[in-house]
Length: 343
Image (cartoon, rainbow, N blue to C red; front, side):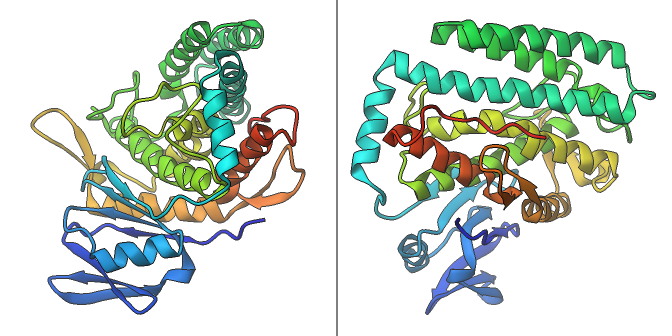
């Protein structure tokens, strides 16, 4: 099993990354602020526009360390990686499956089944833990709709039908997401998803966490030898990591949505950690990002028993484990792709 390493998050927009030997150096105004050996890292995420030296990019590619650039507000800009690694036969099989509507559909359906089940689990836990202070009746109605949709997803036979089912489930789920926000209701609420830009504090947290999850998922797919840009549910589009988005569907409720709720309900983030721009978009402050990134890193270190492997793994390795299981299915080592079901 792969070892969980750290991800370096560079949050100061004026930071510039350079290389010294096998160390990453973070500089601000040409002064060294931080250094870390490359072998301690599995990824680097930079928030800002200053960038990195070509030698630093080479160091990351040589050690298979993902290097991603985001805007100061957290919007994805670019990703740098080195030579394509992994088994070429695995990727060729992946491409053949992607061109086969029937085979693609089977994988896509597994991912969406995982997503629906995990959304139901998030709602079910809220009723179990906070049923006396939330509108349980309203949530149970949506849970019933998700149950019906789960049955339809299992029996449907076309990608278009599956996309319709997934779209409805996402809408219903986020229609009641506001019920799960228990504290700071005057500044944290959600009446539906908004993005590019997010229009409220809660949407801003979710979008930020989804960006972090996308980075980890794309890195995991590259690590096992799959092409993160050729998916089975999300259609191909230049520059879009479709397979990473496929794999993320089942992971969002567990890795991102629950953490977002904890950050707000435990009052780890507050209204002062967000700022509203002239275009109506809401963005996280530097201090707010540091708080969320700290919680993200801490959450990744926690261990769970993987429902398919029956082994304890750090939560941060779940994207890698699911990528590995997908690769095993594509190679023909297992009969089907087993999505991740949160406990």
